[in-house]
Length: 426
Image 1: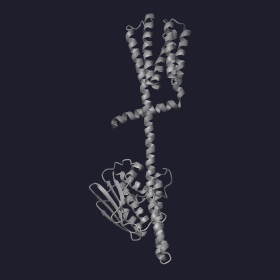
Image 2: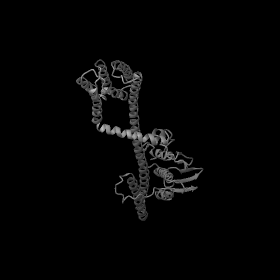
Image 3: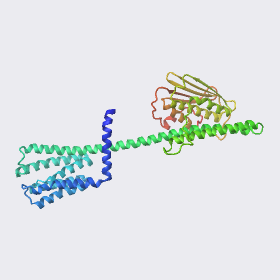
Image 4: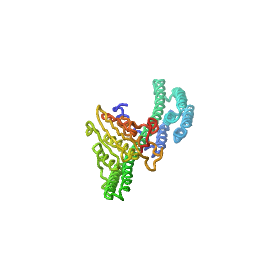
């Protein structure tokens, strides 16, 4: 659907939906209003001198036509049958009543509520009844003012067919409105799920990396405390700074997703980390023991902020995983390059020489790698991970710098089916 069509159709559907909601809020107004209007249309027939029945019979027919309409939505075919039967009764009585329009209302509701087969039956009965009606009243003189009764009959049949089609169209409109509302609700739920996933990834990256750094530094501080208390104190200060930094990031994240009227004086909206913060990230990593080097190439400062955040988080997650397995002599090389409308990230370590305390196989579920792939997918990128020739682990990511399609990420099962051998990245 083009933008021009949407500008026309969407407001119309919204207006119809608002009318529908108003009708549902006050159902008695339409229910009784139509019934009273149809009864009032039959009152002039009481004064028609050409009606053969007396006024009381004409008044009874008015009520017989209109009262069944109160149940036209609950029992549309039954109401149609009753109004048709009353219309048949008017033929021998010779009463031409304006309340006969109740048949059109009943037929409209058949088209709006009943299956198409019942609508076809009702329309066939209406055509036959209109032909009989025109024949009887033409011979009786009630339609003597019509010079072409057959034309009047044809127009009446066409009008009733249009009423049936209008009812069917109303049914289709209701179906479209319901479908649009379901789609809107699904989009709302999808947006909420995507936001929860984004927040979950951010909190996972922030807490996972910071806690890994803190655990590594705490182990080092405990070992240094008896022999080198000053270095132990310095390590504790690094731990405190890392914890404060993580708390600041969490406060900023929660402030962004919190209520608009919530106080944010203690949670300033600082910029998200980017490639300029990689040096500080590696500095905290080195403080935990391993050696890390950073190599960059290309115009990294010109990358979009969202892409820089994705690169930063991928590097952060890869370093977090390395730190869990790292020994003091582990060396990590981080490379970030951009060329040919692509940014390439590589994080390679020389391999673990110890098993992290408390670790056991299969406890992480590969969530870290899934999160990295989700971030890369937003920029039509890919992430691969696996053992390298150095005896360690490598993470490679490639993302586009010029296409921000932000495609929906693959499902968890799809991503895990694409995963190579994993070293339990958190």
